[in-house]
Image 1: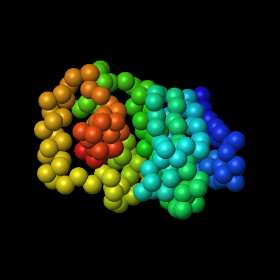
Image 2: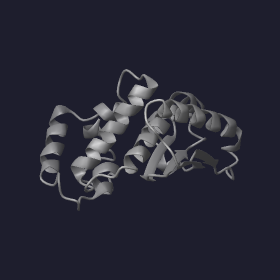
Image 3: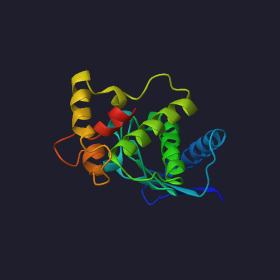
Image 4: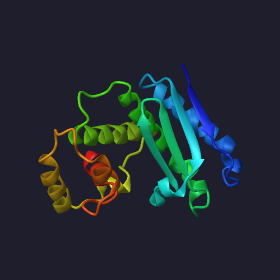
Length: 185
């Protein structure tokens, strides 16, 4: 089957970017296919500033399952045009890796598996894009913060009942928005 890109273009701010979005998606798909088999994925680009990472210019990605990638865009971000050229490709390769891993599910969805899942996607994106340094959020924790995080995480490593939103998206005050990503990469 194929990889399909869908651009939700009712936002007047996304329309001017449609050709570039499609081109980058095709390039990312080709690059990933050189290293890993990938099939049956829909990539949805849409105007969703709340789902973006401000530090990389208003782009964010989320893969909820083996066949879907949502790319949130903030075309009004001051660095958005640069981010399309500099960050979208790596975001797509990262999310493609997630869909590939979802197509071969783990035994159980545990916190340890989720941290490994995130770390592998980050390193895969670095390999595909030939990026030499990890993203800023991958190195944001101090040694002490990482130690504290790991001490808390070790208590529930293998429990399938961990709260993914708490550990990875900061839905509670216990962790910042991407502590699980910091440790995974």
